[in-house]
Image (cartoon, rainbow, N blue to C red):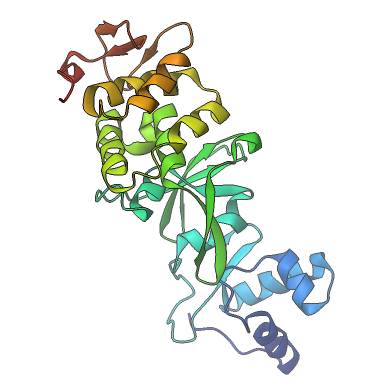
Length: 269
């Protein structure tokens, strides 16, 4: 269905709203631009959506439909650009941030969103874009960078914070083996980021991070003596698994971590 005609007033308002090519439109933003009540703006956006000029992403979130489009069933041009409008206070993290910073060449289908929200559905498909949501407390919004995507400023975890999130939850990096590879990439190619690992680990205060990081550094990067010592000094009591998704039958007492036998190999010289 092609977009249907609009009255002169409605066309003028829509043109005013879309003048700066926003990647996403919400009732609050429309109310501010058009100088109308938020409830009125919400009804106006819904009407434009029914007419085919906007495409509804989810309740209260719309994207413009390109003039040349044959159908309002459009895909999101850039899922990054609409993340904040859809998921509140959030940042791009995990495997998606790792792709952005060149820590991995592996491609993931879903965009990894770290948000303060506690959604019922954590795996969403919106306008043909896949999102995976992970809840993080607002107090842990540290180590973030702002990048511009489609005219919108989006927050993304910096390389070191990205690794720390994945050490806290290896699933965010596709599993500990992949996380270990990305840790190696960071140490080799972004050496100025490495010292930040200890700082972010301290700010998050998750004991398992030090255990996993210390074990991986001692095994693969023994030259990172300062970082290794920081991990050793901050070991908490109790034991963690190197990767909760993998069976672990060997205890490395020096790092208080249970690891799969396949991960026990001699440290590099």
